[in-house]
Image (cartoon, rainbow, N blue to C red):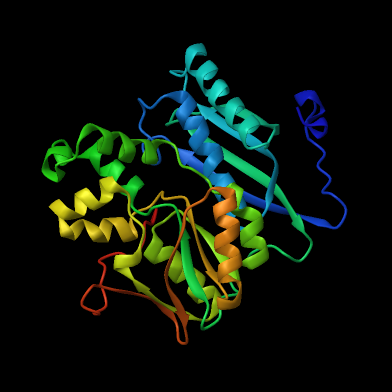
Length: 311
């Protein structure tokens, strides 16, 4: 346990960043019926709640330092549920070296609600922000895109697996990507040292890249065919080409989209290989504003909704 947690016996914790470093703070909540299903394993719910916050820290180039937890539970969550939740949370806190510092547990008549505030550290003045992209930078993204949104559709639509002609391994992959994200904390230092701008992809690649462009006062041109896809996602698109909109605009990828100056690109890719994180170049930053996604014919793709929104 982190010494600043004071054995979880006090009303607050103490967190002191290393000399020459600043604290990075992020907060995300997950709610039953919105971010997970009521029947999902409690350990997986705990992992998702922590990992969506770890993903934010990764995109800022921050090293995890700890987190506080607010857990609102209905009475239907008994001791067995709590034990499973605690095991999942404890395992990930250890895995990502992000200890629990404190928090609160309350009753709610509504669905399970979990709010986490996570803390990280970066050398002062060197957090990777959304606002640094410049024309000529290359746009890169980690991992694969669209799996989680497709996995959610599998959960919601009976018959989707057969319609998309997915084998069992493909189904398991998409469902797992929705249930438990894979934050890219191993790439945090490489992002901090090389990216001109970065953010995590939580509300869809198209929409989140658009947010980065707005913050930077720049545009981006993306070749949709270069966006990295899993074998399962490629199978879905082979059966239903219109699912490309879901892939590019669906939420819960929890990958990182970043812009990297051309002169740093080779060094960034080398660092990503050492970190064991797949990174793909998908386009470039341009003058103007907004992110444009181009189809194989060079025409701009138009989406009904660029990203997931709660409202």
